[in-house]
Image 1: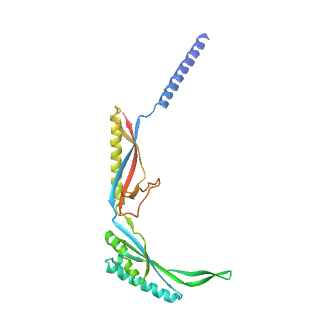
Image 2: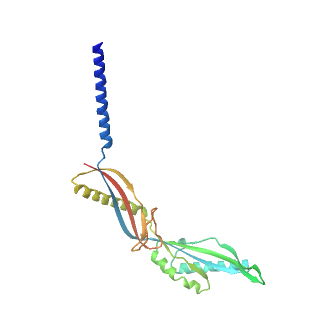
Image 3: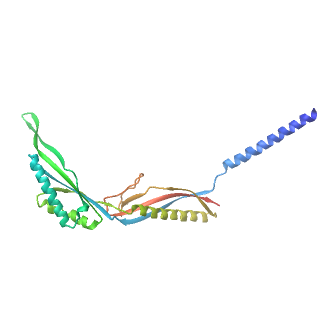
Length: 243
């Protein structure tokens, strides 16, 4: 009986020691931090837009709806001839549907106010989409020729785009990753450590702003369309192990 009690006590003691060892090992592993280096790689690229989109809008007004339609059709034909004479192909020109609105004059007479019908206003937009950026830029500045022909026309600022944006983004991601690797290697070497494998990578925001401008970056990513010459930038967050 005594020997059985001694055996039981020994087993309990061993279990307690083992439990303490397991708990201590778990605590050590839990408190052990992975040795890593986190860096942000950056790539920037200047480029010039290869696609321009330009819009202008002309209108006609008359007390007669029929006369207004006759005039807007004439303006359409004159505008088309003007663009073709400047070397713009038919395939690059798109006319919108005609927009109709009624205009009124607000007057007061002897303390009474009323709206007096002032005619029908018809408006149409012409859109030019072309890879001949310089040519369309020049035409947009020559739009006064149509004004001199009696056409009431407004010219909007051109918008500039880049058709190879997907390829550019891939190239810049590679550059940003390479830049991040260089930064991480430099940090490791100056810390008497050796850079290990890449553990995690996250692409940052892709931004496009005007070249040499004070245009602000956006957390959601900005895409400038008002400038022909642009600067693209992208960041990549990288985390490497350290040996």
